[in-house]
Length: 280
Image 1 (cartoon, rainbow, N blue to C red):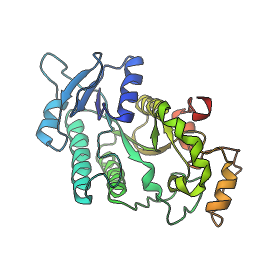
Image 2: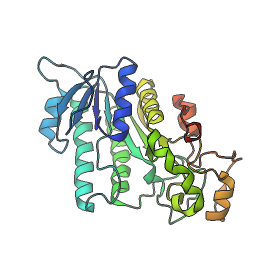
Image 3: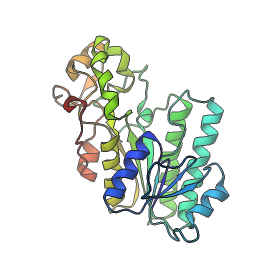
Image 4: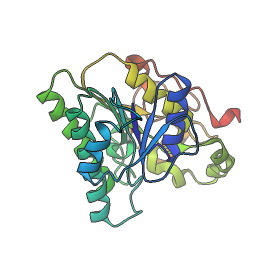
């Protein structure tokens, strides 16, 4: 199976988790992974011929791909110019999706983003916890591409009913070393309101990828993937009352419950976060 962007922050955790669960992993990236138990192919994903060639196999290394996890991208708004972000991310995703289909791959999981929910929520969310039930509200070029990827996946699955394409709307990816900064966030509730105080431990993001790959469904589905709690020590209800006083709260909020609903991922994929900054 192929993982694009396997050397990135989330990609490293995904590759480690898949290898631990007996997947044979091929990494497509511009830099080599720091591990010897995967196959590495240097690929520029904006070069379609190179992507298709690598997807069809590399002599003496592998000759077939049975699944694809597409994580590679300019990873956030503002890191490059808008046109450069659009050209890189949109073309890379189209190339990976199309090459995978031409290689006969029907199991595709890719990184969508929490940004399609309306981040940075300068316009308040329609309700909290936010979920997958309202249409995307992209507020940046980066988020626009993620929205277009979801639309593209839906149309590709319409063309091919045997195809499975699951988009995971990852929250802000964190590793354990990032958690030392979390207590400082309490000083200003507005400092992290841009994503409703959410995060995803990279290891739990990897779990979600694996569960999405293993799920037997077909068609396009999108899932919010976040941790079960927030980055704050303050209660979730208190944060909403202070920063979004006019936003509807649906259901009962536990003390630190995430405001990025993971109910669908729990129900459909069996996803359950196993790591929290509070346990470090």
